[in-house]
Amino acid sequence: MNQDICQVNIIHEDRIAKAKEQLPQLKNVTQIASIYKLLGDPTRLRIMLALNASEMCVCDLAALLETTPSAISHQLRLLRTAGLVHARKEGKIVYYNLEELSAQGLLREGLLYLETI
Amino acid sequence: MNQDICQVNIIHEDRIAKAKEQLPQLKNVTQIASIYKLLGDPTRLRIMLALNASEMCVCDLAALLETTPSAISHQLRLLRTAGLVHARKEGKIVYYNLEELSAQGLLREGLLYLETI
DNA sequence: TAAACATTTGAATACCTATTCACATATGGA
DNA sequence: TCCATATGTGAATAGGTATTCAAATGTTTA
Image (cartoon, rainbow over all chains, first blue to last red; front, side, top):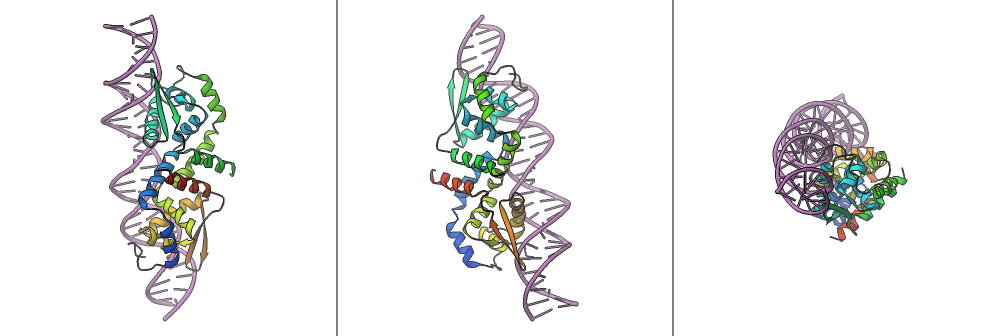
């Protein structure tokens, strides 16, 4: 079959039209996707779930997740840039927290999903 | 600093212990992460949102999302394997639907997240 | 000041993955 | 039967990314 964009053989124009109305702009969908993507890595998701339990520093997270502070720090930067966590510095130590009202609903739904399996 | 697993310098044992209690098993966290990851790609997320609006076939999705049926089919296979969508064949045409009670809560939260930006 | 330590950062690397392309399969109609 | 069409599939590839390693930065304390 023709590999080009499927323009000729549109099967259900009504359904396509309805979905087109309901679908957010690509730009916005991409933005939501970027949040899902951040939660889609086990290390980052564990960081988020750990911070959901308690404020923690980089070394805490490294010990808890049995990895290196460097790996944690790299991932925290991504989470921070996306506004999912924020940092609070106290002397040498940097404490990380979940950003309220950002991804907690998504985290909650993820845990609910787990219960259904 | 030592790049090995951070065992020596555990800063807040109480917080680590609390988080360790609350954190699901790595195996389970990884499974949730795999769902987020599937939603973390713009093409797949748009497929999911489109199917949330209406049942559609591969060609419909290709036309709506302005890509090839092949690309759509590849992504649908991943979504099907994960149990997020299911297929219903009718003659030549394969209709795809969202699997109820699977990722709809996650989708809803994603759209809510969009409203907060 | 010097040393120890928590964290960050940049480059390198190994792995993953989304799309494309070519082709196969399957179904319906002429 | 032959053809058009809808979908699936496998290999190849280009781009993305998580981790590691080495080094730097900033901060406290001796």
